[in-house]
Amino acid sequence: MKPVTNPLIIAPSLLAADFLRLGAEAEAVENAGADWLHLDVMDGHFVPNITFGPLVVKALKSRSKIPLDVHLMIAPVDPYIVAFADAGADHISVHPEAGPHLHRTLQLIRSLGKKAGVVLNPATPVDTVAHVLDLVDIIMVMTVNPGFGGQAFIESQLAKIATLRRMIDATGRDIYLQIDGGITPVTARDVLNVGADCLVAGTAVFGKPDYAGAIADLRAAAPKIMPEFAVSAG
Image (cartoon, rainbow, N blue to C red; front, side, top):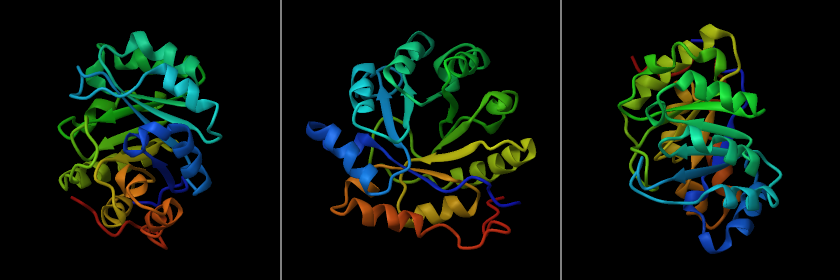
């Protein structure tokens, strides 16, 4: 397995931030060295929780200089793509289960000038993205079941990450392999060893008193030399 070509991206998840201070929290993690700001949008239908909508994204856009990485956990998703794009989302990631035509949804996102992502739940097979890789900028692997922060990492997803790394490398495209759920400095090392290059971290950053130190701890988990990944995961 060849090394990833993208630099390591740290994307703190605002779901774990202080909701009374969202603007200040966004600025704080940006100043602490975050690369992207991850926004989990939940509708209480597709996942069992409700968070925020386009108005919050628009407000945060005025406070954040780093890309807004928007993860839509809503169904149906297509009617809301334009609203989140207009609000300032730089990346829009969707679940295949959230609409009938994934290919068309990705085309829509890219037509709006945004990076397009596909999110794979723990039980969603990797073959789901096999025929849309030409339209994908980000593949996100959920290493917890979506809907709540602070869950334990699902170890079985390491094999999926390794398989996706091989699929991405075969395309020759710079597709980010993003991991969301249960990320700590320990699990970060595991997923980076099998090919991830983007970490979504909620409580691992916002749950710490020192955001810069927490982000540095995640970066320190990256293998120093990656001619091959240390763990094959099957």
